[in-house]
Image 1 (tube, one colour):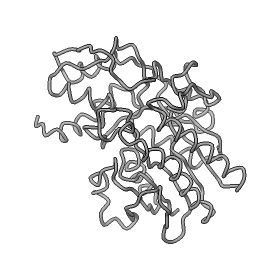
Image 2: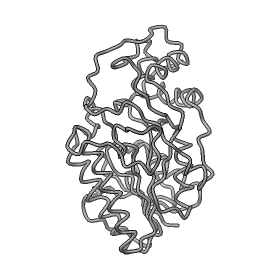
Image 3: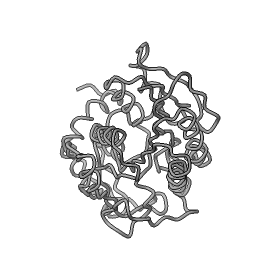
Image 4: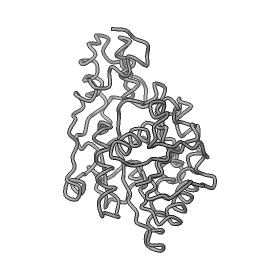
Length: 320
């Protein structure tokens, strides 16, 4: 297949491009590098199965040749307000990627009669009143809060995709992605796994905000990409959660990373100055993915952290 992947230079987008090329597809990668990195695609230079186009997806998209599928992954994704790559510092761009970008990429799919997959997010559930979160849960979201530029952009994107599916008969898929980690994450991304690993490798105390009881579930990137590919090739047109159902507190994650990195500095508790409306719990119900896709994550957090340590050491300039 000829597949257009937006956000191709991002953490997830670049791994997706690799997997699609490995599976024998021709990939047209698209990115404007607002949060993605050219470094994530350097290894594909000269690859005959890959073509890169630098473009903002909020502008009209022209894709050369025939397109069999479109996978829309372009969007800032970090909630960290201290990082210049976080969506709190890119609010308009985030809204445009979710709204105009989704509209433009759906237009490509419609013109080419192509299959379409939207990268949505667990953030559409907001600060959930239901745990774990099944796809049937409508969410608990502040439409004008400090996270609204991302949450509402993705909720709108899902609604737009379903509208194109129902009105124009576009063959669509929606994946709701839960917290994921792996190689190619930016060191200054601002998310908890890169922050903790860097502090642990520098033998510094790991900074935990509040009492550390807030939870997330962390999926290794290889597992996530496998789930996305299975969804893409399935017949399921309604949203599907892809993530690790093992719920973990920030305190437990910090202890795990300190132990793996042999960091004696321990943990430093800080006043919670994180972005408002920070979800207290986040855990996917993956019953649907198990039943429809025969998918469940294979890499636990301890193994996943060990796998990514060499990448972070290299990026930090550390020599063993």
